Length: 213
Image 1: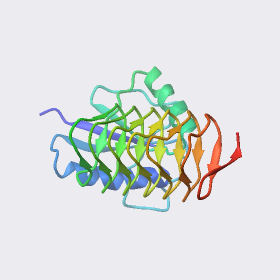
Image 2: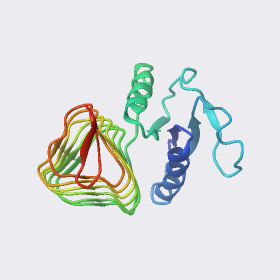
Image 3: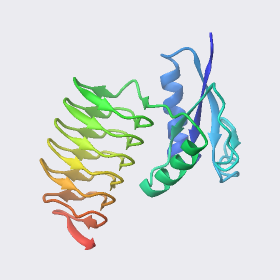
């Protein structure tokens, strides 16, 4: 049997969490092993002894046929930059869905997306490529989430919402039904979005208000 190596891109806090989520996933999926991290930090894991090694920098990485990459970078702009560099090298990315996540009918998930523990994706929704759905998020029916978006812990995306892409939602942020959040917008932690948000803007508060456009 050909064994595939899962290599985590990013060895920061999210990367270390993904290391644990991968171990959970591997219990149910023989034929895969953890192959380490790709990270430019070098020293980021030195204070720990229970993680796989950093096997390469981003610049130095050369894809191998038995390797699949998992993106563990939270900030959308950084994620997009690193992913595009690795794709240009011919890297192949893996979509990781934790075993405890709940996915209903007609849920479409793109390449390289990360679905963390205890998240719920209801029905009839689309999640794009290289999206991060962190632990305990909820995504409701008829929602569309664009590429490179990141949902932090406990985010709530309700029915009919559109996140256009490269959106960042802070922890416990919520977007109410049928609201559209423009490309590259930031929704601050704990915010509740009641109305459409312009592309590239920053909103915070309850209800969410612009602090930057």
